[in-house]
Length: 507
Image (cartoon, rainbow, N blue to C red; front, side, top):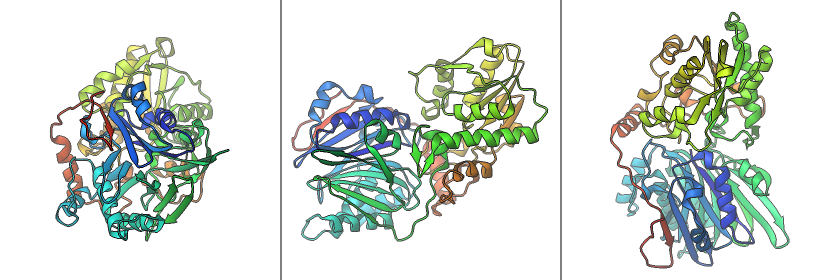
């Protein structure tokens, strides 16, 4: 899960890209980067931490130009920040290329070997995004005639990229002297949307991970990028698109609706907020039919993404809805923090209980999901310490039992509380008096009812069915082995002007 943006405008885009990253900050808090173009020159700055900490006035002044891309990152393999792996990435052959990527390639290791042995390209980091950039660059070289770039060449290169890479990817890329390229994997697993803004100087375009960026930047939502589609916007604002995949299947990631996306976003024609409300409806129905004996005095959400489901659940059950936890906005999301000890320590820094909402009551806590169980266990204990008589726990999603390989930081089954436990064992492990999980088919219907055209979803972390059909047991074993290796932390930002030969300056 990362946030990506691409803008072609009639005026400088540095502030637009910065503001866009701010509203996509929830998609990645590990690092951030912006690249812009002015004439034939690229400018880039990237570094570790939140968007507001990476960029200073001096950095923004150097990011000149009317088009560019941006990225906010969190590590998909659970690793700590590595300065070399922040995005965007750059190569200069056959054309100057900048790329930012959201997702995860499942055949990255094979592609690395192909790059070295066949394509004669060197991969300098462990990032699959650098692999993807070099595959695209090689395909551009193969498709071009006398190293001249045009729309036909670019679409052929994207088609070649689709043939070679596997997994989930939403991409924005800059092609020097030409314009902005955006494309999405043939399954549409990771989201990508298009917006436009008409000005007296001409039409401006924006592509982003979520529609909330389009809304807040004053653009008009146009549509989602289709699975396998490539969108090309040249520096004059000319918009072209083409389906570049031989075979497509629209199967968006279900976890976007459960947790990842902001509630005010539209993804593949579905309001994330409305989907979460629907999750509350089906949860209430399940409680009413399977646990009618529960004497619930109050329904309390775990801030923030579970609020819509919790409020609708309370309404359907006729039970008071209460805010029982206050969230510290300046602590990062525990779900994406590397290291179990860090996550456990951060829970009480992140949340504090309002004792009057718990004292002497039977409370139903509602969360969007239970992944590792560490946070759930700590929160249930906090509720008991605040005076709750009984603590029931409901998850708006089904048990997370399998590794996610498409760009979400939960790749190891050993870390998942539900991987090898049944519901009763999970209840005991987290210390709840009752545990209610959403049913998978009910979850699908909660989203599908808002856009009947969506007939399939990637629900691999719930059911172990990997939609791309290429995820083997050996691949899953390799992920678990990679997570077990210690990770060395690195830091420091970098400022890069790609027409100048000078060392990067630390932020």
